[in-house]
Image: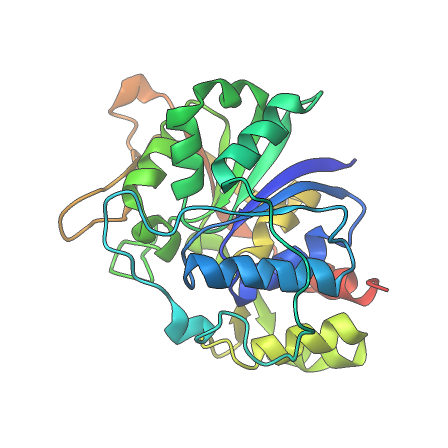
Amino acid sequence: MTHKILLDMDPGIDDAAAISIALTDDQFDVKLLTTVAGNVSADKTRLNALKLVEFFGVQDKVPVATGAQMPLLKHYQDASHVHGASGMPGWDFAPVTTKPLTQHAVEAMRNVLMTSEEKLTVVATGAFTNLALMFRMYPETKTKIDRLVVMGGSLSGGNMSSVAEFNIYTDPHAAKIVFEAGLPLVMIGLDVTMKALLSHENIQKLSTLNESGAMLQALLGNYADDETEGKPMHDVNTLFYLAHPEYFELTDYWVDVVTEGPAMGGTIADILRTSHDGQANVSVATDIDVAAFNEWFMSEIARIK
């Protein structure tokens, strides 16, 4: 099965790993890559996306458009302490010659969606500012989206506060708009991404696979998100889900996004189903097969030519 997708991201080291797979696996047909301020500023996420489409030689096939430079209302706070000042340090990429689209990401997303003959899957792994703006400006685009698969949120604890995950925390008002857009939405959050660690053993093997593996190993060497057993590959899990949903456990909940106060950015599930007439707006990934993830990731990188 080929997944026709629109990627909205903030590369970012784990984004770079996800992009590497999305651009090189035939089961993913990437129609557009848009960027947003998140892990690093919007000018840097755009540059990093262009570096990757050129690295994989798909610059004439996959257009890049840059989007929102700041959250809707909240003060912008990057994650350069995790991803480095550039967002992708460690590899000497060739100077970029490709130009991004002149259109803003919101306009580019709208055009791709509305001219598509079939519905597309939107994979979002950064702040949700671009999507929120599109849904507010062009609500008709919702009719051309099959589903949203997002990396963000957590039901079990955050990495920006006791409850807030970074992508949601970066622009909680945008996340609330997206979560309440009325579209099928799969939330791949910290509940699974902090389990799906790429083992240190596998990270050390990457450079023996090919140039792509060497590039990713170099980036991961500068990735400060580190656990005892490996490194969390947060954004890659969206693609793993699309490729192998059988390795995930999902539960449907109504999930609210907190937009103010000390819990800002929290994703709160109605576990007792006492609100919204017991309805659900999100399918939340709650467990994952870690061994299968590692095997899949390494095989994905190994087959890149």
